[in-house]
Length: 223
Image (spheres, rainbow, N blue to C red):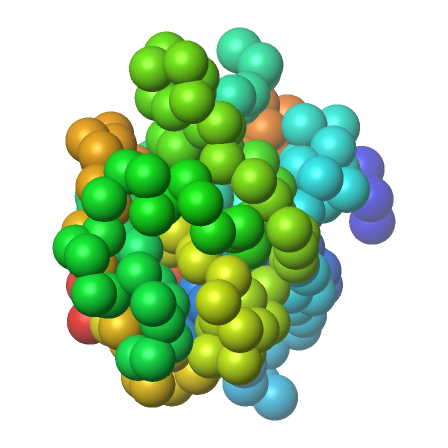
């Protein structure tokens, strides 16, 4: 059976068994993936899904070919990876409505005076935040690192810690609804949010089928 599946030219979810492992940040899982893929969560097929957090461990699994897809703004991958850009976005600064920074703008001095929350969704933050600061001879202070946007929003709403996040996350996440969004006081590059997968899966019939049916749903999702 394994040999027949290996050489199969088509994949039929109603007759072929397959588990897909997908890694994504919590925002993408909560507001996009589970909704976009819900039409596949049917008892009438033989496919199953394992949706895991996007972090340094799942990035290693993706590069090793153990995970099937990942949604990330990271662009540091080896040449064996395939990519589909699904969206572009810009970064915003979020803080609580009573934050002292709101009285002044904020300025770049304010931005660096208060400690930050870093959302460790895989990686990619160095390229879009910390590298531009380094080129100016500046560095922000990271007080807290978390693997969840919702955790970052929860802490930011209770403290004077600042967080840099994609605009669409701050706009759509319920946990961020009580926070203030501000433009960062320095020019930061735009984000490219992509779906990544390993070369080993690129021509696999099951993986090709998943990409063909899932990508349109993800690309057209309002969030």
